[in-house]
Image (cartoon, rainbow, N blue to C red; front, side, top):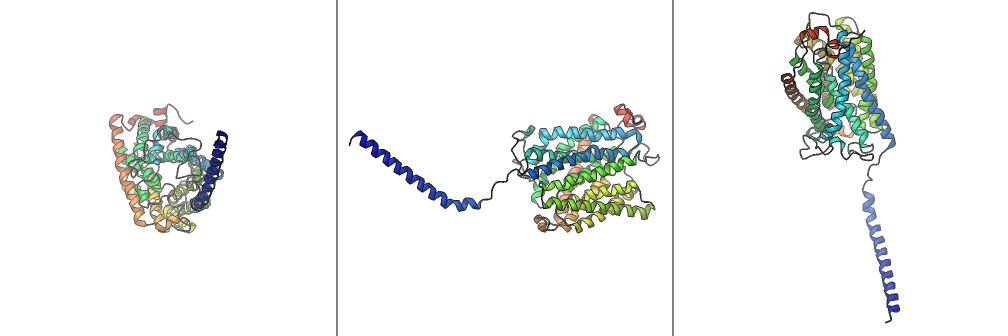
Amino acid sequence: MTLKKFTTAGLVALGALAVGLALADGAFAQAAAPAAAAAPPAPKLDTGDTAWMLTSTALVLMMTIPGLGLFYGGMVRKKNVLATVMQSFAITCLVTVLWMILGYSMAFTEGSMNAYIGSFSKLFLAGVGAETTNSLAATIPETVFITFQMTFAIITPALIAGAFAERMKFSAMMWFMGLWLIFVYCPIAHWVWGGGFLGSAGVLDFAGGTVVHINAGVAGLVCALILGKRKGYGTVSMAPYNLVYAFIGASLLWVGWFGFNAGSAAASNALAGAAMINTQVATAAAALAWMFAEWIIAKKPSVLGIVSGAVAGLVAVTPASGFVNPTGALIIGLLAGVGCYIAAVHVKKALGYDDSLDAFGVHGVGGIIGAILTGVFADAAVNPLGKDASVGTQIYGVAVTIIYTAIVTAIILYIVKAVIGLRPTEQGEEEGLDITLHGETVQ
C-alpha cells in the first residue's frame, strides 16, 4: 500500500470512528436526558426578591436609628436623652464592624461543631462575592443577606439598653455589647437559624422571638438586677422627657417591623404577604388591649400605654408572623397586650426591680408569649413547617434561650464590672449622663 493510500484509508477510518463516537454520545445523552430533567434547577438570583430584601434591610436599620433611639430617648429624663440616643447609634456602628469581621461567620456558616456554632471560614467576609449566595436565601446576593441579618444583630443589643437606661457608663456599655454579641447573640442565632440544634429540634422562630426578643429581654432583666436601681428610684419623679419623641420612635418601629417580619421570608412572595398582614393585625390588637387594660385599671388611656402596647404586639407576633393566619395573629396580639401591660406595670412594681424602659416587660414577656403561642396557632396552610409545630418544642426553645442568655450575660457583666466598673459615680448620675459622659446637654 502506498503512503497516499495508507493516509487516505487512515483518514477514512478516523472519520468513521468520530462519526460513531458522536452517534454513541448522542444516544447516551438522549438516554440520560430524563434523569437530568428530573433534577431541580439551581436557584438563580431574582431581582424582585433582591429588591424586596434591600428594602427590608433599610426598614430594619430604621428601627434602631432613628426608631429605637427616639423611642428610648423620649422616655428617659431630660438629662439623659443624649446618652440614650448615643447608645443606639454607637451600638449600630460597633455591631456593624463586629458582624463583618466575625459575627456573620459564627452565626451563618457550617463548622465541625455545627449544632452549636458556625465556623470561622468567612472571617472578614472571606469568599463573599457579588454572585455568591447563602443557602438560606438562595435567590438574593449573599451581601444582601449578610446586611439584612446584620440589622437584626444591631437592634437586639440595642433593645437591652432600655433596661439599664440612665445608669451605665458608656465605656462599660460598649465592652458589654461587643462581648454579648459574640458570646450570646451569635450562638443563639446559629442554634435557631444557622443549622444549630434548636432549629433541628423543630423550634419555630420566623423572625426573632427567641433570637431577638427573649434574648434581649432576659439580658435586660439581668442587667437591671446586677446594676441595681437608679439613684432616687421610687422617691423622685422619673417622668418621660418627651412623649412625642417616644410616639415618633414607636411609629418608626411599627413601619420598620414590616421589613423585620415580612423580610424574613427572604423573598417577595405569598409568605411575606402573610407575615405583613399578621404583623399589622397583632400590633393593632395589642395596642388596643394595653390601652383598654390601662383605661380600666388606671382610669385613663395614656399615649405611653398605647405605643407600648403596639411594641408588645410587634414583639409577640415576630416568631409567629410566618406561621399563623390572621385570626391567630389577632389572638396573639390581644394576649400580648394584656400580658405585657401586667408584667411591665404591675409585676415590676410588685417585685421592685428597675427595668427602666421595660425591656423585659415588653420584649422578654412578649417574646415568650409569642414563641409559645406559635406552637398553638401555627397553620400549615400558611407555612408547611407549621404542621410539625409543638407547644412543648417551643417551650424547650424558650427555656434554653432564657437559661443560656441569663448565665452568659451575668458572666460578661461581672467581668466588665471587675475590670472597668459598670456605673458612673453617684454625683455623675445625679447630674445626668449627657453632661457627665458626653459633655453635652439638650437645650
